[in-house]
Length: 95
Image 1 (tube, rainbow, N blue to C red):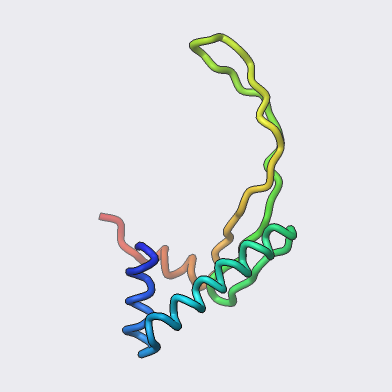
Image 2 (tube, one colour):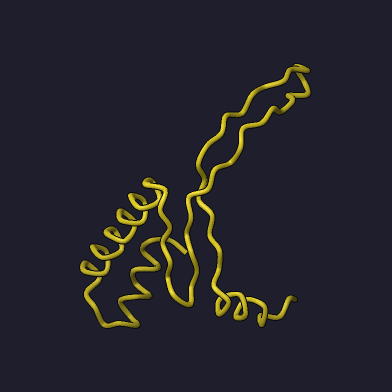
C-alpha cells in the first residue's frame, strides 16, 4: 500500500480531510524516526513495538573475487507484533 492509498483509506474511514491526514502521518513518521534515532522504542498498544537494534559486524565472502569483506555493526529497526496482531495474522487461511 502506498502513502496515497493509505491516506485515502484513513480519510474514508475517519471522514477527516486528506490534507490533515497527510500532516498527521508525516508527523508520525518524523517522530518515529527521531525516537528510533535516539535508540528508544515506540509501543503501539495492540499493534506492536518498534525498536532500534544493533546488528553486529561480521565478515562476508565475495565469491567471484574470493575476498573477505568486513560489514560494520549498525543499527536496524525491528518490529515486534503485539499478540492481537499475531493472532489476526494466524487466522488468515493460506491458499
